[in-house]
Length: 312
Image (cartoon, rainbow, N blue to C red; front, top):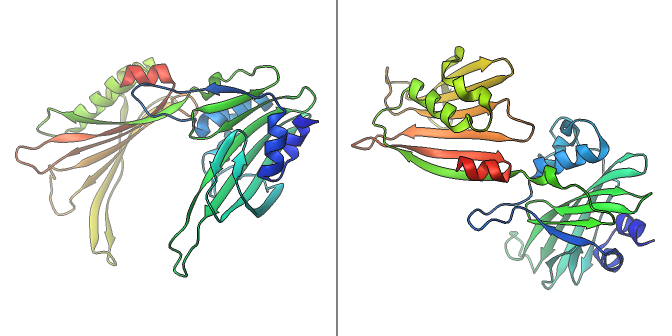
């Protein structure tokens, strides 16, 4: 059966033949006229947890692929490579370059007839010299959801805008989670903690009403030390703050010149805790030593598209 053949294929040539018989329907996600967006591993983890049940934490290894995360990824059910004329996986032609080779690794989690496959395809092309230069390549990461009993499934390519449904449609709303970095400048001449906390409250209040009052939450310094690295002749003063209300918190890290008692050119790194799983707001804000001083930075959002548009 082509559905089982799709899941059991272990090379692009076999997979391409099976794929043609599946009747897969392409769905475009996160397409926006201004932002460049793609399917996030966090969204894939949310979709996987909805498919199999349980917490998305069990699929956190979609996000970090170095094998050190908790929980760790399962051992692969297949690893293999070969020379190919075309590198293909689940509707995507990754390369048709000369001297092309591919290497597949497949991980799998099962719950009855349902399951998840995480497929990574590394491809390499061209001639390489002894020093490793020349040639090229890349990697595609594919997440598959499937139910062998109903021949129903989903295939999505991380960081792309494309997913495919097979058989009866699947609710893809968990994939509505995208990341965007926004640069900003502020008309400030100084960088003070109270003002920074007010900025964080302003940015996050529309995302979750709990953060409306975050500028008044109790908390303070949790770390204050000078960090020295003799090898690189590097010294900095690191000060960290935590302000908390129940399960919600705002964490700030401040870098200062250790040789200036009241350094006016500090830099803050801010992490917001307590948003829904997979959602993030991380902020950098710094005061330059320019004359006159300038305050600028960036915000990394990972949010649903409507929230992202509103925040920006």
